[in-house]
Image 1: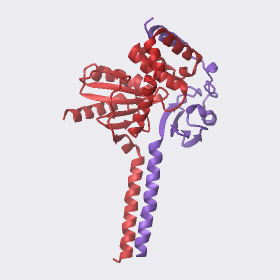
Image 2 (image 1 turned 30 degrees about the vertical axis):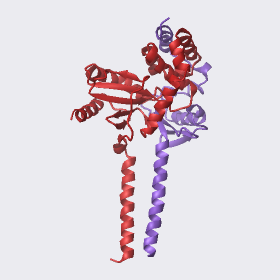
Image 3 (image 1 turned 120 degrees about the horizontal axis):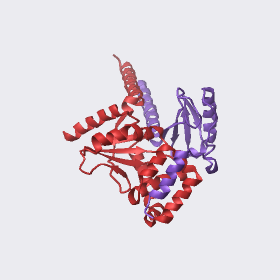
Length: 214
Length: 128
């Protein structure tokens, strides 16, 4: 084989292998699971279910505007809570991300974080899961103002920079982890994008639990 | 010698293209949204659109394989894109145009259940 043919063949082979790699990467199989390049940490304003002594920690990047995140909270979280969180096996850390600059959306996430730390977050969570567009209404803005007037800690959290910084940090973490959409779960430093129904999510949890307990 | 030069050139072009593609993907964040309720769609119509934003200057919706460009970085700048998706949804059998308008605060109509919950948030979220 002469030199010219060798280089042409080599070039062709490299081109084919790289193209195949790119095509596979575009498919769901590889996008579902990615090894994260940096490690996530629990922050003070995170919404946490479960105990510190749990065997497995699951981070969830979530947004109320994302219908599949809401589906996760409604159809997967209750069973996950019963089977893994209440039994001390799993700790779920929710990080809300605002994938928009819309002030109403960001305010609602800041309020959720502040109420989770300084008040009662459950009713707000229920409301945002039921009707996320509520955040654009005048009534919602009035409620934020009422809560701020009633509680100085919530007021300080909302406007003293704590929650603003927190939401910005979440978006920073989201990007640092190379996440491209919500919901994204990060477990054992591997990220899984997209909604999974409970049987599939359970399989994932079992796989990661087995990995942790190795 | 010539073949070697062509080979090197091809590899360089390919490397540049590869790096450019990677960068685009990493800078963009996307979020799925079910527009079914907003456009009164029957359950058999797939009304899931994806909103993507690069967080700097560009955002767009993707629906049924088509991209609908927004005018800015935020979802609030996507009224025209949503109107176009609305037309596609109407053709697919959905009932009417977007209920909530362009997220105009005065036009947001809350369900009775949401109004009750909102009141509960007001009353029960912090100590008086």
